Image 1 (tube, helix red, strand yellow):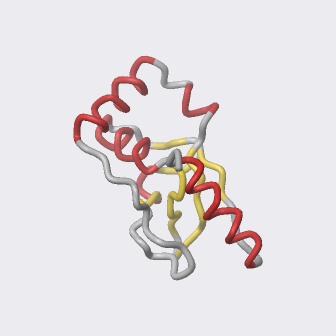
Image 2 (cartoon, helix red, strand yellow):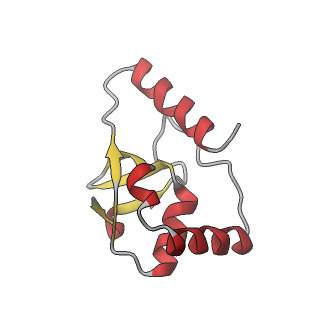
Image 3 (cartoon, helix red, strand yellow):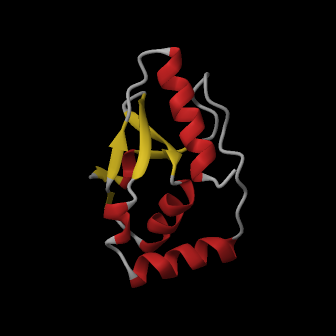
Length: 103
């Protein structure tokens, strides 16, 4: 579990990772909020994937879930943190970000 205050949307702050290309509407966020309210344990089964960065964590998979959770006032979320140590690690993170966005 990580405090929501330490989680950042992927806005391109990692030099090796492009910002999250996925665009969503408030309607999409509202649907995610409804889902989280109906089944809050879902996040335990599908935690956010994050990378440590400057004392915080950049979310590379789960940006919409983070946005929905923030709007619901959630204070902490289940996360899996990866510390990339090689180019291969970075490639894996980028691939997972694409998979999470359904591309």
